[in-house]
Length: 188
Image (cartoon, rainbow, N blue to C red; front, side, top):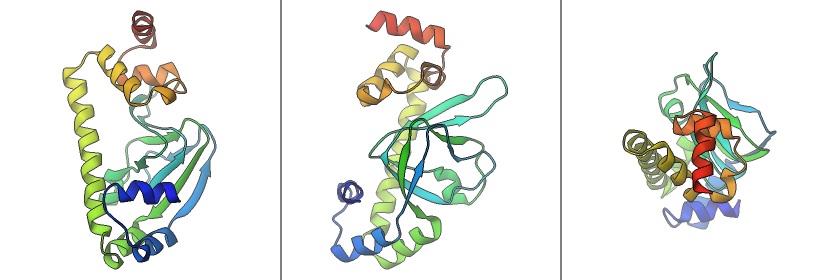
């Protein structure tokens, strides 16, 4: 849990009292590789911190799934649009490796906002961070080549990207696995 506190304190200093309130609401859950953490048609009830693992967000399809996000160790994750609106998602979040999450429920997070001095500040900063990541991804899809998108992901998480199957990486950057193979051959 100290990793979570350290991460939160990058955004705002937490008093011991605020941390005790926040940490008392956390639930630790483990998910085996290939487990759906959130499925299409369900409502997201948790904001989670990844202690260990890699998650893939994708839109399921009969022909081929469309991967649109990866989330790694030390990051917060959620089907955040559903978490906020309380409406079902049209995508799935899957564990690509054995994963440990520390989770806070929607209702408990509302209590944290009401009971702590910095809860709202942390919530706002976390939301801003998610927005920036989403904007960066959208702009990358519009402006960058597939090779540049691959290089960006490789630069951001070089030790973890090797654990992601090539078909998911290809989907994420919007190309076929064969095209990704050609890009990797040019780079290495």
